[in-house]
Amino acid sequence: MNENYPKISDFILEKAEANPSDLVALVANKYNISRQRAHRYVTREVTKGNLIKVGKTRATRYFLASGNEIEFSIKIKPGLAEDQIWSKYVKPLLLKYSRNIQNISAYGFTEIFNNAIDHSQGTMIYSDIKLENDNLTITIMDNGVGIFKKIQEALQLESIRESILHLSKGKFTTDPSNHTGEGIFFTSRMFDRFSILSSDLYYSFQNQEWFLSPEKNENFGKGTCITMIISLQSTKTPKEIFDQYADQEIGFWKTKVAVALSADPNDPHVSRSQAKRLLIGLEKFKSIILDFKNVESVGQAFVDEVFRVFQNGHPDITIQYVNANKDVESMIKRGLATKKEN
Image (cartoon, rainbow, N blue to C red; front, side, top):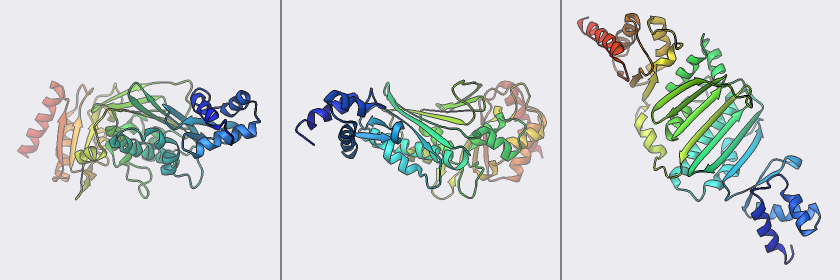
């Protein structure tokens, strides 16, 4: 390196954000040096921790470690480790932010990236990390079979919409020997906004409220795209979220379930079969909150299966309900009265 290095270094760091793909060529042209020599200057900035290198050969790009965005694609192969990807590409961007933001981001990124590695059955994972408008946005996308489709096939569900119901409960996984199924549940509650786009369905969770709609994205084929957003001013901590739903003695014990997801929008919640599908896996919890948002009506058999049959079979489980309209609440109270009489 020569006496011009400080100037070249400043130039590299000044131009990196706007020129991630052709930074080496830009340096070579600016200082009339060979690409090989320019590459050595750029590599030195990587070694010093000022730049993050993504990709290889012609696909190589450079991002500022102190910048506002980094994007990268990773081939899924044996030995790929989410914690190493986090440390290499994402962590450097967040070092200047509070510890709770770093911890929540680390949890969410590694959980979702690991899901893509282990479950997607895809070949590539694309990620974009962006700091903008005082928010951190983490996007992780794979080209696999699609998370909702995989759950539908694993549980042999008639409706792919019902996959979201089981995913949102927590403790559900298609690979119980290697995963607890808790990652998405806790991640969705740590971040201010959490969304999944897959199989032409868009599911989002924000401020303890869920939203589901059909959505086609022409730029996104099969696979799964998960987006997590959190304010950089957030004071939430992972421990705070874990403590709301988990206990050191009995573990993950509490869940909230969107009842509307147990049937198609135009189908009433009337049958025992619908109730049984709703209740799949809920015996693993000690406290269940049933959210009746967007449920217009329920039938006697549905209510009886949930509030009498299931409850009698699991007397140690507490069941509460919220967001029930007058008709739904009337049926539930009638069912509870019948239970007391018996």
